Image (cartoon, rainbow, N blue to C red; front, side):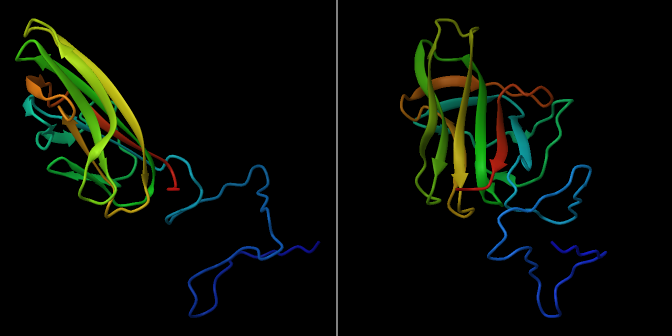
Length: 204
């Protein structure tokens, strides 16, 4: 075995890609105590590289089949929250991804009855063609007899974002069972109804 000692490895003039190993290399060993510093963009290593949370900033009145949440959406305002990355963005309730990956999407909803009694669904909606949205996670509620009563629900779904143009997310109520009228609770500081996006690794 031979040993190469150097301070810098660079590509030849006119080339921008550097490859370690060839047809015979199956493993690269990094000794204990060695730190790899990345000042650029890494791909292919997996791991959580993006965490973002959004919340409803003021209470909405929902009615319809379905009722798509399109407004009063802001960044999580919780005192301990800080995002990792900015891959996920939203416009009028359509959540888009600027980088492919395998994501976990979460919907935590706080609801107050308005029309009672009322049975309704709440959903995470997904599309793979930037057109047709269908539930990728769904829950059912039956509003109690009093408008002073509340429901809380939680949904999660795994989303393979293999195309950033076509794969998108929305959040809704009443897709499968129409919601007559209820309040989706929001607040400017406390996250009551919120949506989380966690990039777990590369797309498959």
